[in-house]
Image (cartoon, rainbow, N blue to C red; front, side):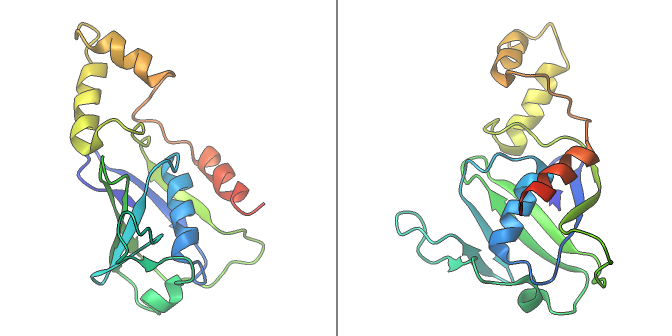
Length: 175
């Protein structure tokens, strides 16, 4: 899972079961990346749009609830598809199916095996707004510095990635 239009990259490598639905994968992406699931989302897979149909927003979405990854990707590797979260900030994620593996005994899925960098804060303005936020946070003399620190409400470390924390969130999905 790679957040597009961000440098240096923010990404997660997550192992999921083939019978995972797109609805479940939405929750997995949210937890793996560190989003708060406040906003709408959609999938673009082979030009088809999936998500939670909403007659007030986009009634053309195919329902993600029962669509399984195994049906979409089969046994193909190196397939890419896209997940958009928060249609205002438009956080675009590229999902790459790197490899199809047999399930490992005594392993609870989903599991994150690697990643880099912290998820951007919710509602910071998308890739452009995030870049601006980082510029401001790197300059304590910037007139907006104190305002942004207060807006964040907690310490934000852009380079931080905590694999144990991510896996704890993923394991709590199905408890």
